[in-house]
Length: 117
Length: 109
View: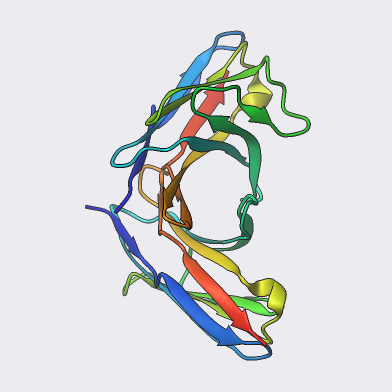
């Protein structure tokens, strides 16, 4: 079946540094990818929709200059957390949308655990 | 390898009960999640099971058997708004989420 990978799986960084997270669709092309943040109550918050070859669409309240998204190819989207602070520590999950005929399916990655010290 | 299996699609009648099964094979286990996702929206958290047994939350219940690698989501008194995809996800020993492909639930009047 379809597989979406994320790298790294976990990262620890110092406050003020930037961290890049990669999301790859391994066996299908995805023109649309999504970035989520998982909160302690397990809910997933959609941060942004990443569209290949164009600018990402950010949800209300998400700082686009802080969370940089680049969808440079049909199989790769990156999320860069710039000038990370401890409150950015979280579990970041990406997903990729696969379209087959009229059917759309969203496949989720394993997540990246970010800890900012 | 790691694997999560759940049915691709299920159909049920408004007012009835439906059970969505999820079986998993993962390297380690740190809990199982159920999410509901309506088309075009972000998944909504429904439940989290880490111990065996049944967890009830209103019309929704979730069951876990770790020895069998099995969980189910039970939806009672189905409403039309319950038509959605239901995602099963397991957190493995590395605290990574392994996702099922989702079960599309169609509710008929």
